[in-house]
Image 1 (cartoon, rainbow, N blue to C red):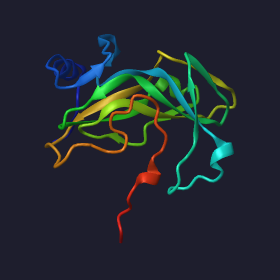
Image 2: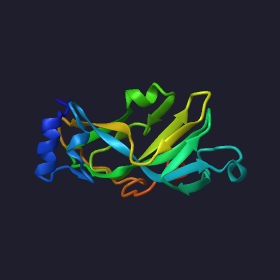
Image 3: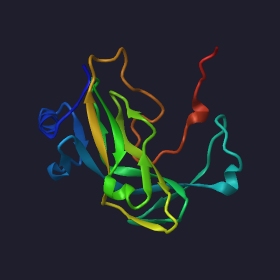
Amino acid sequence: MAMILSDLTLKELIKKDELSIDPFDPSALQPASLDCRLGTHFLILDEAKTGILTMDSEIHYTEYEGDSIVMQPKSFLLATTVEYFKLPVNLSAFVEGRSSIGRMGLFIQNAGWVDAGFEGRITLELYNANSLPIKLMAGRRICQMVFCRMDQAPSRSYNGKYQGQTKSVGSRIFQDTEIQL
C-alpha cells in the first residue's frame, strides 16, 4: 500500500543514499514533508513572441536570474527549487505550497506528481492571486515536497522530457505524442 513518508523515514533513506536531495538541510524536514527553497532562475511568459498559447507550438519565455523577483498582481511565472532531487524507482512525490505563502495569495504547484525515478530540480508554477505585488526572495522556503512509497516498483521509471532539469523549464507540451482514439 502507498503511504506518505515521515521525517524519520526520509532521514533514513537519505543516510542510506536511497534518496538524494542536494543540498540537504535536516532543519528543512517537517513531520511528513521537506521544505524546499526558491532558486534564482525564473521564466516569465514572453507575450510579444507567443500570442495565443496552443498545445502544439513552443511557448516562449524570458529568462531572469536573480536573488529576488517582484510578481505583479494576477501574474504567473515559473521558478525552480534550490534542491536537486534523485528519486528511487519506489518513491513518488508531490509539491504543495506552504500555508504561510498561500495566505499571502501566492499559489504554488508543480502540476502533479513527481514520478518515481525523476531526477532534477522542481519547476514551480507560481500565481499571484493578490491585488498587490509580492517580492520573492531566493533561498526562502517556498513549498514542501511530500514523498510517498509506492505499493510496488513501476514497470518503468520516469524518463520524460523534464528529466535532469537544473533550471526552471517551460512547458514542453508541444513535444507530446498524443494517444490516438
